[in-house]
Image (cartoon, rainbow, N blue to C red; front, side):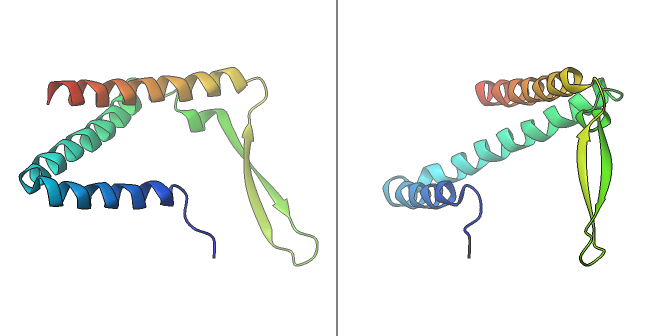
Length: 111
């Protein structure tokens, strides 16, 4: 069985939280509070991007193509770039990452 992505970081976080509980248990509520604020800021940044750029979402630059398996007639789907939209697609991804990152940074610095 293959381990999920970033499983090592999850184990590391659990170990660090255990150390935090052992050393300074009074800091656990503050840590969870700050974690929830940063997570909420990421969600707000995502929805802010969707609201500000409704016609330039990254998935609007992709099209779905169906592939049929000749052995068992199973259909697979793949998303590919629309012709000439590669730069717009990559710019929309970078724009979204910047907006979400800035929202998380602002929340982290302000909290």
